[in-house]
Length: 79
Image (cartoon, rainbow, N blue to C red; front, side):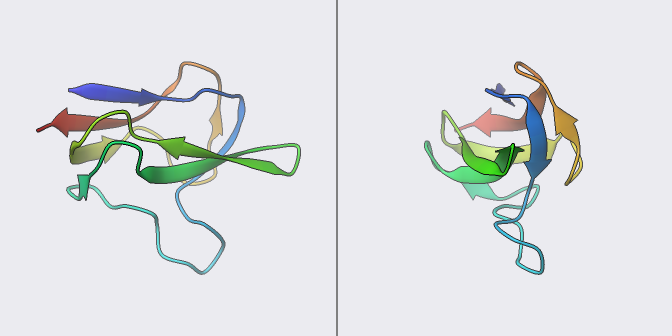
């Protein structure tokens, strides 16, 4: 299992914008470098990407939750 951790403090979003579908869902296959969410810091958005390929086991945060550096955002079962 690989943990995807927050590189920044801010607000985590699973969608590219309100009304859009989430980047990924639990159980989806993800590739290394795939965007799974965004972190907003002072109106600046940074992408959260996977480090490895596998199956997204689940998010540890809800859409709109505050995050701190090192917080686990999601877990990927590596393939």
